[in-house]
Length: 251
Length: 166
Image (cartoon, rainbow over all chains, first blue to last red; front, side, top):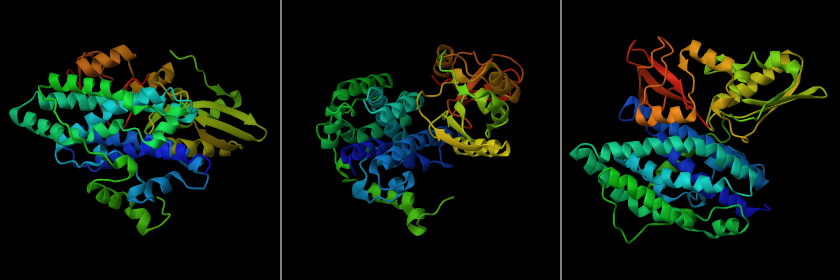
């Protein structure tokens, strides 16, 4: 492969959407209400659509005949570069919303910068995705407010979810060596520069939702190096089952 | 309005306008604005289409339908999916908007109105059944990625609203 860095970088971006999409897909037919069920799976569909574009491009960059499906389904856990946040489970609806909100705000900031990439394919995918992610952000922000500024119980659950997932937010801004090389070439986004705006935006919404902004000094990381939480194995088992059981199957 | 006009060879228009979105069968793919170019090169037709939403499952089917329609008309065809420039609801033609309304789907408003409808609950979306604007959003997400769910407070019918995408 001539451009290993670019290949790795595409995975670093796309794996977030793949794993989050997979987690949201778990709600198909199981959402707390018909509307939220449909919303979560619509968001999942958007994310998978974006992943297809990224992985089709990664397949071209890899130059070894791998398809988008091969890249999505046939890697080992350590080769997935998604952040830990997106692999956290749907403990209850507040967790689903908190995970979505904490990722969406980042995703929107990230894509706004990726639009300016010198790499025209990445820039085109970003331009396309950003329109969809605006809807995602509206949905998750809306629900943070509704649950946070809702009943005593919904507020407590929303606060608990935010508190628990907060420890995974800082990793979003970790600059890997792949990321740094891409930034130097004018292709990648320097995620560390998004941090201040991110926490400011998140803080505004939490305050408006009558929720506390967690004060945490210690943050988890590892996903970008392929070191995942215990949830990842279960996600991959389900995601990869059909391809492992019936190699090369199509439907 | 975006000025990006599709380039479609005249001979191909009558063939392509018969191909429709499988999820909105009344809407031709030309009126939908997803065909960005269709040109004849030698004995081959090259078509470029762009997705409405990234994950739109209709795109694969639309690609196959285009090839089938052109084959029936005696052309060999190749279909490429392009992402840039990104599709916008502005590319739906006036005829396409009318087809949507007749089918029972409210056509997209402009970006400002869309925002005030989806975020502030303003009553601007017209019920495709009775024409009343006394309508209410039920959910920002609907039966497909491109639509939101609405309800008419007057005739009490639920309906889909095609969300503005810019």
